Image (cartoon, rainbow, N blue to C red; front, side, top):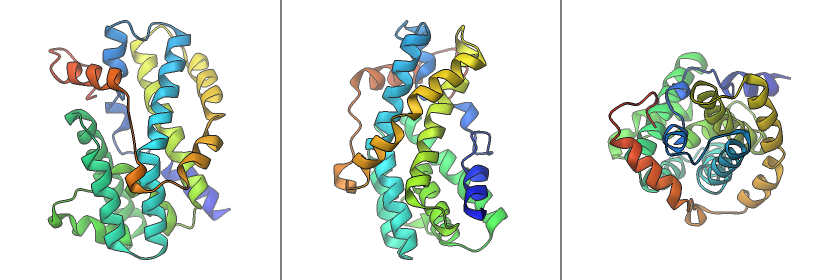
Length: 225
């Protein structure tokens, strides 16, 4: 039961890491008309979660396994893999800011941990990133890697849907219906990610990269990404 409670607490979409400040690219997708109704929103959320699985999700699993082995250097390499693959400045900012907030909160709540050591290790030039920090934290709390992966995927979808309620004509029930449908893919995404290495991380979505680049230079923005 303790593991389930830890998963619920630190995987909660309202846990104070600043996720509400980001839309994961949805704001510009709505402005450009790429996302304009429930169907296109669901397609967008599924794209985001699939990219999360093949990219950040792989790093989360690497961080989880490194923490289980007590290997700080492997944790650092996972963070570096995430950071180097964030082509857009806003996405790098999102990953690093949320990672730092999670590490700071976990240090205050949990206390001494490998994650705390990793925070003190950032002088090496590699920032803490959110997916890796989440993987490390869950490993140290005794939460299994499959559950940690599921929490990460749930959070990626929730971030976009939370933004959608503020950006589009969708209500909370629409968002929950989409979340329910998208969550059906998590088990399959985990099976794909669990055997991947950091070298296998990928996130090919040129349309989203173009939208993210446009958002970076927009004069009026509700979200930071």
